[in-house]
Image (cartoon, rainbow, N blue to C red; front, side, top):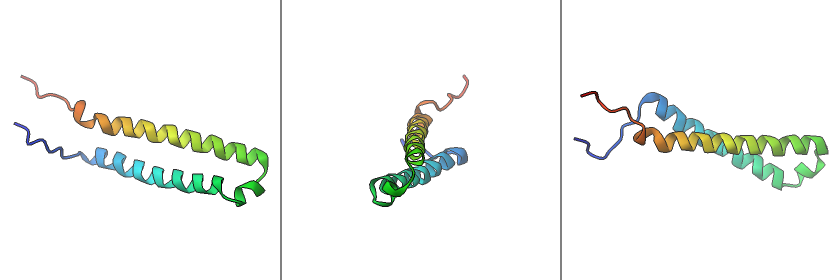
Length: 79
């Protein structure tokens, strides 16, 4: 019988913490890209920073997908 409350395993808690930290880094990078200093960075470096932001956002989406499925994919007890 489940109470409806899910207690996460340590690795799941680490994934949640990792996503939170990653999202904070994404927010800082996006703020930098939107700021005036970014315009002074070489265009090739601007391109790399945009690519980095895109990859970080994709990574964050993957982590969120994992988090969303922690409960759904919980292995069933045999028998």
